[in-house]
Image: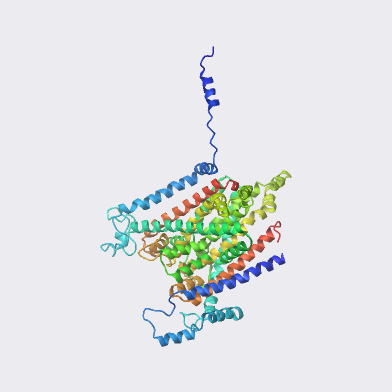
Length: 309
Length: 307
């Protein structure tokens, strides 16, 4: 009487399926939005290619980045041009060093500077902002006054000052970049914390007897992640720009280490002799990194901050 | 409003004082100095030089003298490296030049950026919009020290139209490239900010009301949408001014315009702390003042803000 109908079986399976529907978390939502953003995804791919090139590239290098090609250094215009035969894929620089190896090393430096600078800003800025915003009162006004004062100073000049006073090396550079870049982050985080701490779920946590540090780490920080990630991603190109600017002036990383800003400066200095490759290769990597970082930052903002559309 | 101005001034003045003290102390903790060289000077000579520049005094006395001379005589003291020149001379020589092309770049970036942004927003999703957006993004990736070489390459080496550097009393040929180099990337940011702000304003209720009552498009844009659009742009102008100031360091060096930036970098390399300090304080004070002015302009533009 009750024959087997496929439709009924399907319906029955549907009804008896007690698996809870998995909700879509905010992060997964944001992820989906980011993946749909064509410009941002293309930028991620291009940036990944550059990172891969920087990691794999040295294995194909014929020359070291400090090695001087004595045979060709006398006539760089004629013999130093990019060529596969000589092993100088990007040509020679003005001192006869292989530009391929140097460009890779410079790109590594610039990417590192961007990441570490942004990471330092993220750590210091978030800590400062959360403490000021969460504890409020006099502490808040003192801490924010300090930020206001520091913000009122042209930071690139301070960066130069720090590098002159503390000496020029990697560690100083990272510390100096971190020291000047956390201010806006601290402001943003404080603002967010101020609105978060009056929300009901914080009140509930307090009522439930959760300790202050647990409130900060379990309830406030996770809710800040979106804003912080967006701003940090926008900071990366800014850090690369600042480092390149300093290096261009000759105040950044010292030889034999180099950075893209320094290479561009050298290329710009010699372009009058017709050795254009010395400018164009570093310039290409530099502009590509900056543009992709802008698109990724914009994509992250659109994805994580749905209000802003 | 007046109380707001006074309150802001009360913050601005200590800021500048703190800047003076902090930079002064930073310079003096630094190891080495303008008189340390590879061949050390005889101690008597060094003592004489230190006495000449007042470096033998205790630190607090030096700081007080420095501070006092700036506040009362507006005197930044003598240069440590360039003999017979005071920091005031150096500033008086270089600052007008930096200020001239700095101000022009500031205006150019604002005018072109706002124009592009508005054009893009009005013709949203048309070719004008796409062109403006691409231009804006490209411009943002081209900071002054990238634009400089590109401009020289194109206009001086290939086309031979413009002189590659120099100042020559500020003739227009000498101004074009520094101004373009300095303003491009901020033009890009301003265009993007203006565009998104204008789009948001054009979608708001009061613009719909204006359209519903039959106002012409130009009246809507200029009479109603303009002021709220410019608010975020104005708040960005303070930072732009700072960037123009620091960017001028590069322009001076690259185009040999003879502005303050040249002295700044050379004094950083020769450890001429007096000049370094003077220029940092001057730029810092200017920044504080411009930030104050932008905040006041903001208050004037946005009647909703109450102080």
